[in-house]
Amino acid sequence: MIDTLVLGAGAAGLFCGARAGELGQRVLVVDHARKPAEKVRISGGGRCNFTNIETGPNNFVSQNPHFAKSALARYSPWDFCDRVAKAGLTWHEKTLGQLFCDQRSGAIIDMLVGDLKAAGGEMRLETQIGEVEHRDGLFHVATSGGPLKARTLVVATGGLSIPKMGASGLAYDIARKFGHDIVPTRPALVPFTFTGAFKDAFSELSGVSCMVDAKAGSGPDFHEAMLFTHRGLSGPAMLQASTYWHESEPVEIDLAPGTTLMDELAEDRKAHPKQAFSTWLSGRFPARLGQYISGWPGMPSGKQLAQLSKAEMDAVATALKHWKPVPAGTEGYRTAEVTAGGIDTDGLSSKTMESKLVPGLYFIGECVDVTGWLGGYNFQWAWASADACARAIADR
Ligand SMILES: Cc1cc2nc3c(=O)[nH]c(=O)nc-3n(C[C@H](O)[C@H](O)[C@H](O)COP(=O)(O)OP(=O)(O)OC[C@H]3O[C@@H](n4cnc5c(N)ncnc54)[C@H](O)[C@@H]3O)c2cc1C
Image 1 (cartoon, rainbow, N blue to C red):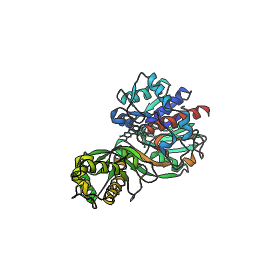
Image 2 (image 1 turned 180 degrees about the vertical axis):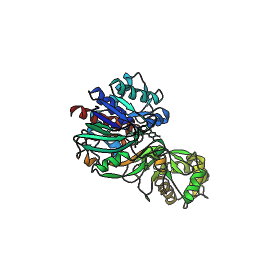
Image 3 (image 1 turned 45 degrees about the vertical axis):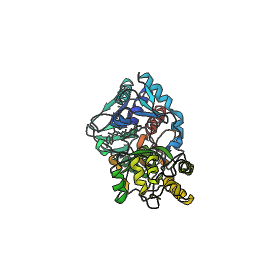
Image 4 (image 1 turned 120 degrees about the vertical axis):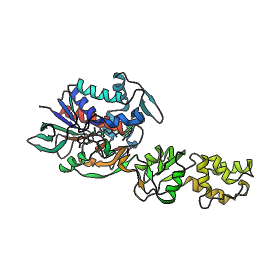
């Protein structure tokens, strides 16, 4: 008989299986997909942004902002780097602490699967999971490959993002069945969509990008690139803001981050008094974006810089630094990198990821209501929550 059954051969499930195996558990990992860890494969544009060296609890969104602290503190980005280095893999920091594999992402999957097997663990793919029950101190799981039972059950089947890749709500169903609450889920790290005049304008601007400070809801300002698309706004700044966004709210965009714009305008007015304001816009911003802005209501577009009053310059600076378009929605789970919300952390131990309601039942990775920013934080949560769980299982 196996000791630990792990549902989901993704980042968290494979890593937990390997760690628990190393700590003496007989582990079986099952997954309905044809290949393990497909999201690792496509992550980071094929180079897997596997962690972020700046990781801290503030880089995560959860109803309980303290929940992730313990696991993150006990398994650091450098712990995972050590593991990656031992596997002979190398990495580089791209930006903002984001570590990417020098090799293809498949090398990380090979490492995870290799570690699981080296630790005596087994992996079964293309296995459908049916009813999950807990009786006589054991978990009984019906599968397309026959019934399985184990003393410990780890649920690591991820969130709802990208159903085409096998994402399902299984973790939430199992959690609900055993009495857990689910924090309402929503697509996160996802582009915004717009309708009407915004959609028409953004479609014209498709392909234009610029650095902005962007913020939504209670989130911080993200200083990253924004990209206009045929359907709306994307790029890292928008993906980050999307995690904090709620329907019918605006996204607050500073199109001229790091400057008040007033000083710039005043200097340029002195240096080029005869320059048309619309020409100035097209030089200050990507040309197509400048043309678009010059058509905004209230822009003194017919004037030369010398003709601008202080009040007009103020109004320009305010409009550009506090642009507040209201998205119609997001691209949804079809393209969202993660699912925000999930299994309510109130029902889980932050030290072990064990259910407070059913001993021996654990939830790890993306299915838990802990959502990282863009930039390697979500994998770091997968590794850290998996490690916390594996250590606890070994101590049971
Ligand atoms: C395009 C894209 C790029 C990304 N890039 C990055 C990145 O560079 N860095 C980063 O930190 N994060 C990135 N992420 C997010 C990251 O992939 C996830 O946060 C992470 O994979 C979550 O790990 P997990 O093990 O919890 O879930 P998953 O990796 O999603 O694994 C869940 C597993 O469970 C299986 N499963 C689901 N339902 C069932 C079921 N009903 N029966 C059986 N098995 C089931 C799935 O097949 C899957 O193998 C990216 C996500 C996407 C979509």
